[in-house]
Image (tube, rainbow, N blue to C red):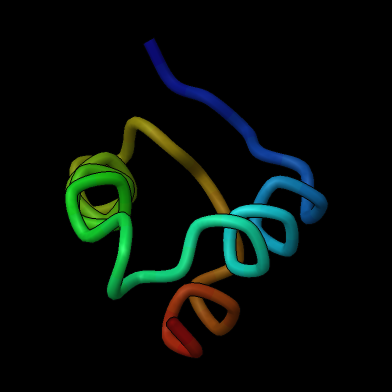
Length: 48
């Protein structure tokens, strides 16, 4: 199953779940994007 995420999920996650405190969340998120389970704008992901 694939998911399409709204921009708001990225903004809130970045602000409320910083990478240094929630590294597992961000690693799993990257894995899902790389395996095409989540579709998003790749330019936005690179900023993380």
